[in-house]
Each structure stands twice: as structure tokens, then as C-alpha cells.
Length: 346
Image (cartoon, rainbow, N blue to C red; front, side, top):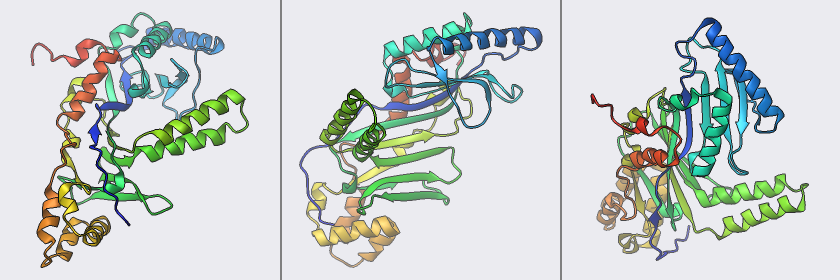
């Protein structure tokens, strides 16, 4: 692999929540006739909304909720809603919502809340003060950076931690998956530019038999994807958060701080013979850094390679990335403001 050095300084974007799934505790403590009346009223409103085209039926895997609908606050955003727990005794509430906050505007959120108020009734506003988070993915982009110019370091790796390298058809690295096979949390580092391009191409394929306007939109997306600067996305996926409150999620370990990178465009890298650097990179990706450094023991490049591995790029500043992303939900208005505050007794 021939290495081309680029002079553009990468920059780190503001962190975002890229996927959020949460429960609202509707129905908790309610039983008998009162509960049945509530569910019948909600079912009636959902059917009316479906008939009026305000939402459409959603078909999730499994059968955890009696009603499953999709609401689209705008053309390119979708919110999945499950209502009416089928196993009320073990589920934490009768509403489950799944959405991508990074694709929502404040106006989208207002439209969503208005729709939910119409479906659930006046008690909906109170539920927004007690959400229970089941899944949360936090992401940050590093713009003007190519993934094959990086090595990934992961601190606190355990015995069952795996680092899986993903390659495209040309043998180019398109991503790394990092995490314990049994962990509730998972970290992914991948080429976002390639992902956007792939999505745009698939959109054109899907819309091949569509109208001229839909084809035009897909072609514009493809051109935009091709024109974007190279971008690496770093994503921590909380796959099983297990019904934590927003305050509890804010206190979770920041797994971004466990990550570091070796920049192969760093000034130090340029002082190492290219063939030596290429061999070191290949050995790191195939055998791990320890084996790669052992390979160069006794070589005059060993000291530089070891220094390169421990060097931290100036563009990687992971401090409080997780907390900043979660706090960003407050400005969107997805939950009530008091969910982000410490109780007076803390």
C-alpha cells in the first residue's frame, strides 16, 4: 500500500446522539377497568390517525407491543412507536419510542410531541419527566481524515475484547469494531464517506423505476456524497442500557476516552522509512501492536515506531464527549428539562 501524506488538519465535530430508544412509564401502577379504558381510548385514536394518514403501521420484530406505528415529522425522518406492553408485568411502561435525534430539528420534535399528545392524552407531558433509556448511540465525526491513515488504540481491553477489521472489495480498511463479545456497549470506528456513498448508490438502485423527481433527489444525494471530504465516524453504541434515567446515563463511563489513534500522517511518521512504516502498519492490523513492535526489536526504527504508537493526535479530544452528546438532547426538547437536573436531595 502506497501512502500519500496529506497536509489538511483534521477537525472533530460536535458529538451527537445517533440512535435513542426509550420507554415512557404509561400504565405503571394502573390495573383493571381504568387501564383497559385508557388502552381502548388510545387504540381508537391510533386507528383514527392511521385512517387520516398522520402515521402508518410499523411491523417490528417480536411482539412486545399491541400497537406499532411510524410517525414522520418530516420527509427524511422517522420515529418508531410501540404502545401497549404485551407483558406488562416485566416491561417498564406501555410506550417505547425509537428515533435518531441527530436527524431531528426542534420543529420536528414539536410536531412529534403534538402527535403523541393527541394519541396519549394530557398525561403525555408528565411522562416526559420520567423516560427510561434502553439504547443510546453517541457519535462524533473527524472530518478531513481517511481511515486507512489511522491505527486504532483501545485502552482497558479485557480478555474477551475483540477488534474486528472490516475491508472493502479492494482490501481497503472501511471500519473497526471494538468491544467485548458479551458487553452491553460496543465501539465502532468506520469510514463515514464510504457509507454515505454506498447509501446514495443504493437509493438510486431502489428508485430506478420511480418518478423523475425521486431519481433527481437520489442523484443529488450521490453527487453530495462524492463531494464530501473524507470523514471518519467514531461511535459508541449502548445496546443494552437497561432502563436507566437520563441522569444515570449522564454518569456512565465515557468510552470515547478509552480510544486513541495513531495518525500515519503525523510528522513523526514522515521520519520513518515508508517501507518500514507500511510493514509496521500491516503487522499492527494483522497481529496487534505488541507483536508488531517485537518484530522491529533491534531495528533502528524501533524507538520511533514505539513513540509513534504512544503519540496522541492533536485533533482527538475525547474529553466528556458522551456527556456533551447526552446533554445536547435537552436543547432539542425530546425530554422535559427536569430530567437533566440533579434532584434536590443529591
